[in-house]
Image (cartoon, rainbow, N blue to C red):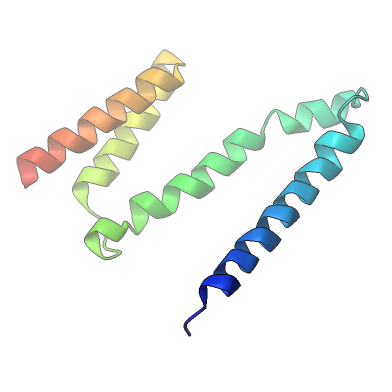
Length: 109
């Protein structure tokens, strides 16, 4: 199905308004109120829940290999996880995973 340029911009505009409304409903309407302790405790785990959902498909079904898992990405994910647990530093984990990915891709070809 082909979309016209006007339809594409309309879709982008609708998605932008929807995204803004969704975020404003939480941040804008109750942003200045103090949240209950149980809510704050639950919100601490949001990044831990979201990041694996974003990363796992990129490791297990990478577009670069037409959806086939490969050694480079799996090894980079393991190194990233290990460095994150060992150093407790997101920066070192990301850097270690990136270096591992590029090194293994360079060696393997």
